[in-house]
Length: 415
Image (cartoon, rainbow, N blue to C red; front, side, top):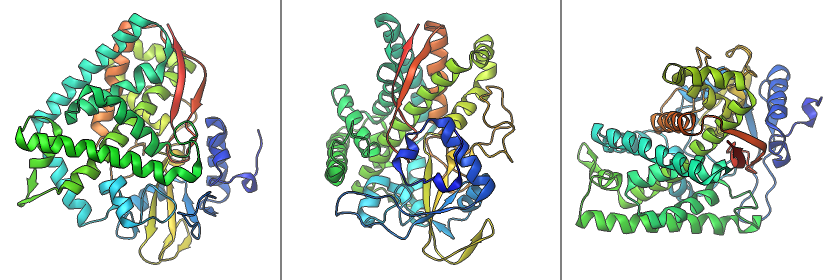
């Protein structure tokens, strides 16, 4: 399919419904011909959001890195996960430290990092192995079906819930709420676009209430789960407030669920479409796993973009940026930049170097969950290759209707 730059509108949800190869071709064309295109903000039905002046689309690897390294110029505080301007309370409720700059961002990140003690990290790695083994065994016992439902959604969800100490009978509630928060523009999760605000606030309130119940229980009877660790961790005598713990909880269960789910599903699809790469990995799992996992992350890029807002006049890619301008850092486009990745349209489990931006660019907002995601992807494919070595994706994946998350909702598998 041949297109011109005038036919590409990154604010149109129909663009994101195109096959991934067509989207990648559009990004390549924009990188060559426009470098830093400007787009009007998406249309939205409902009166609770007013469209703003538009945004610059940052598509080249070097430019995404430039914005990421300079948060003092390209700020997250006005909202990193939304194009529209939203109230500060709304941003912090759903985005926690993602929607903050220093010094508040640094304070929260330090306290949260303190909660991930060596013992907590070791326990988490054991959770990952246990969950991956049990989930794949369940798939092997009950037969083929929807890979997302039976494997890629279950593993990160159950790991996060075990880390937090969430009761098993609440796992389904966490899964449903996280789908609503990150899939609000998809009619499978929110039927009426005009009700998105109600759905978002309802899902957030349900997760916050669950955290509140856990926090009360842990104060009375502390355990060694992450809720207890977050409630007691401190830096320079400061602890997280209940509101900060609640917001981080929402961030963790949503980001730690949806993004890794999509990476695992996309990995199975890629390996099924490229059997020669799959054979390389299966021939020597441990030796190939480090580069294979990084290539899955580059290939999938589960978070398509993050927003920044200019704090002062600047220049980027030769274009003048004005104070208050919005910029969307398109990691999905940067991860196919020909100036950085040799033959970027080729899936290569041995690709090295592979300094992809699937966890965000260099800077203070690099994903805290990067290690967790890598371990989950590794252990899931270890178990798949061990228990159902001939598994493959079949049929066309059903993709999430979203410009923000490059998600796979459903894809069948057989073995």
